[in-house]
Length: 159
Image (cartoon, rainbow, N blue to C red; front, side, top):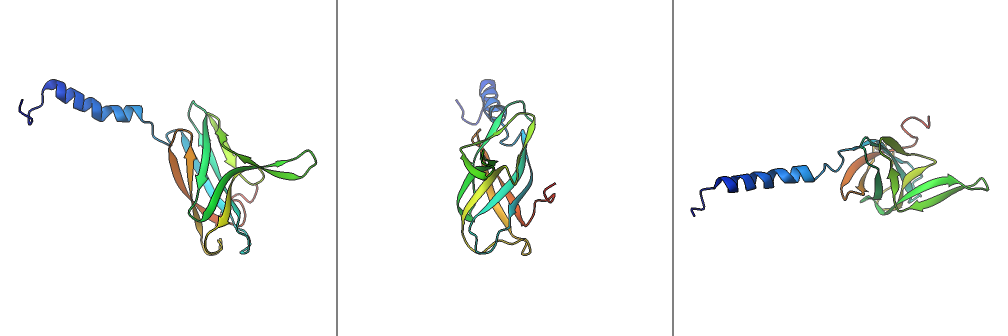
């Protein structure tokens, strides 16, 4: 067989091989939209901060945020601030944060957040226009990176 000639069957097989990956491999954030990422500005002596973002799941299936990382911090964990029975706030470590189908999950002060631990480098400041790159890892194996501006207050000033 001449290797420069393709039979109709070979053409069909090649077309299927080029088409199937697009059909079987979902866009990593096809149903997720990330809104308003930001990182809390902390005093220069502090080496920890918190990151926030709203994650909209417009899909029909529940999803989950499994992990996060940043080159500007040695450790990054998923946490939740919750009021205990005695009225004091407690921080709870989570292995994942559920992203229910058709809902928006807010990682916001006083609730779920991305805990940024052991800062690497200079203090971060809103006045300097600093941003923190944060890579979010989801349950489908895909990830997305956001550039979270450093702010003293939430974008809506807590409203």
